[in-house]
Length: 245
Ligand code: SF4
Image (cartoon, rainbow, N blue to C red; front, side, top):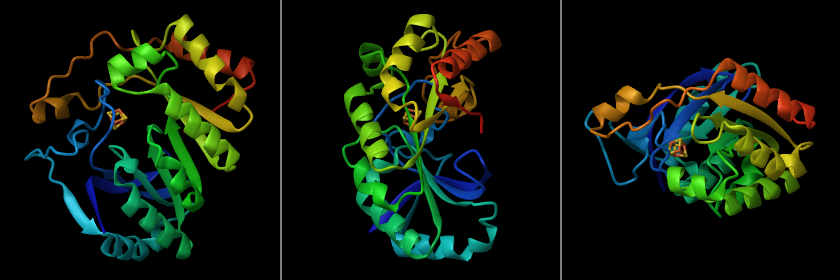
């Protein structure tokens, strides 16, 4: 079994606790126009500027084990993307072997795949996006479907995982009062079981879209500091634990 990834490196605290070796796996089942890793979106596409690495689970495991001394402050390995569940069989095998080695594991996912719960037994931390609770907008703008995302969230709660929900806040998509109210209602049943982190829109991936020959179509998507604070306050007032990693 092999895994394809387009980027790897160490990161401290933002992709799970401590110092973590983070792999960005290739391919995604959504099409967010703000994606900061456009080179990893299409599973069948490879761009000259962004080579893809394909390795066996065995070789990836050996590399990770050799990095063990670097996993300080509760660190370990995080698999992100792209979307990790597109390579669920190999990812499950890798996570299982990592747990056998006593290595802390996390994944970051858009949470839309029915394969996601099959990874739960081998996870210490689940970071999952809930980008919007507006079904039409989620589908038309990002290619996402809300029902399986909420179903997977419920399954993760039932599995008693450590869950951090990421919400990108994007003007014109999900940052207005109605949209954040709708999201709050959708997540309310889980408020005691999750932490939530709002991520203000940024343009970090813009240049990479150009390098891939793709059109970056986002305009006027920045949110104000006031909007960010207001949204966080609204969720805190409703009993959510809002964090900033
Ligand atoms: S789900 Fe994540 S990786 Fe996939 S397109 Fe959206 S932002 Fe990019």
